[in-house]
Amino acid sequence: MIEVSETSLQSMLEKAVNEAKINHTSPLMSMTKEIKKIDPILFFEAAKKSAMDRTFWSSTADNFTVVGVGSAYDLIAETNRIEQTEAVWKKLLDEAIIHNPYETPGTGILALGGMSFDPTKQKSVLWKNFPHLAFTIPKFMLTEWEDACYLTMNIQVGKDDHPLQLADKLKRTEDMLLNTSGYLPEEPDIDKTEEVAPTEWKRTVKYATDFIKEHSADKIVLARERLVRLTDEAVVSTTLNKLTDTQPNSYVFAFERAGDCFVGASPERLVKQDKNDVLSTCLAGTAPRGKTKAEDARIGTSLLHDEKNRREHDFVVKMIRQSMENFCSSIDVPEEPVIYPLKNLQHLYTPVNATLKEGYSIFDIIGELHPTPALGGVPRNKSLAFIREHERVDRGWYGAPVGWLDSNRNGEFAVAIRSGLIQGNQASLFAGCGIVKDSEPEAEYEETNIKFMPMLSVLGG
Ligand SMILES: C=C(O[C@H]1C=CC=C(C(=O)O)[C@@H]1O)C(=O)O
Ligand SMILES: [Mg+2]
Image (cartoon, rainbow, N blue to C red; front, side, top):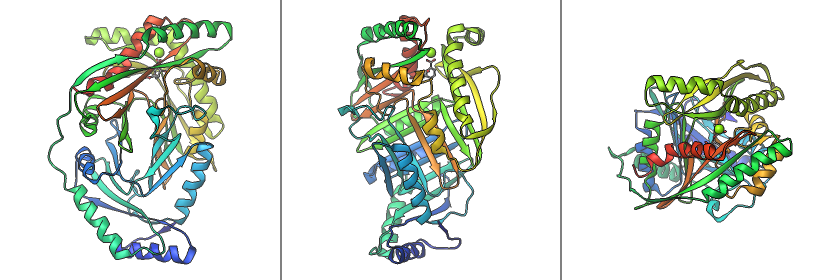
């Protein structure tokens, strides 16, 4: 990696073209500058004009948002996905020419993306535009962190490229993107929604509880799908605006690929890396919110003491602690969970803090943790085999890690729940439940209904 301090866009591009000639490579050139404050969602909307795919990531608890436009480089993998991606990522960073005078996480060269829940599963037509793993290093990227905004431009440069022409073209697109309008378009209404095979799903839940008892499994997470038809094309910027407004303590994300868009507001952190500090989270066990403060507190207290929900939760804690031991030292896990309140429901929550050991990366942690028993089950192999055989939905990227990492050993990944795939005027929403031996099909069905709410309530108002 070549870090350049004082420079202009054109001189950076000249440097990159030179490097390409000398080393017979195609290096990434990355340049970051601080810009005047701009609304990330208006920037996302302005990028629609560019006809490039867009990426959105926001941690609503941290005032941190990244919007990516276009792709300077796409890391795509269908098999061996995590190892392969880490190798390509390292090589890209080795060759890159970077000008980023800021320490701000999420600036400079960033890869944003996700992967499918199950890479061994044959993809259905629904997820045709989503490879088993895809990370994008955006061409243009807006980062909002606390009270400042940064614009990063990334471009892959070849030996025959013309620095002045490239600089002009980048500058024109930058002007277009920063020229945001003051409002978001109106979004369509919901025309109709349709539950996919609810009776069969409840039957599968019953079957899973029987299986758990007979085959000494402990937990199996089962998901289902709900289809939404809108009166017109969905407006993703407006959907994101509503999600960031209504879903506190969540990661709001959107990954557009060839026009399809995977969108969600997930409360479930898989891992956050800040150099050597890592934080994972166990989030499983669910109850609704109360209508009054008193009712809410009562529901929360009974969730904390509910045997079935504690069982769902404790499997996750045990597994995450064990997995972190492979890569981390100083693992700190509180004895008891606390309540994690969201708009429509509340969860049991246990944070896991640790220190990353020398030589390991966020890729190692993701590879080991996914799928946690909050989305797969216990034991992992038995539960995945059950899901593969009996679950009727193609989860695609639902339930899998989505997030970002940068070149300074920062990154954050969530588990993509409370999410849906938007395709034109249609959306497929997904929700699942941790099934344990004493799960009741009807109660689990109701739990998934609440889990559809965050997405359902922002689509079409
Ligand atoms: C699988 C989902 O939630 C998981 C995360 C938190 C609580 C869960 C539960 O209580 O069942 C699930 O394990 C989903 O929202 O689709
Ligand atoms: Mg549950």
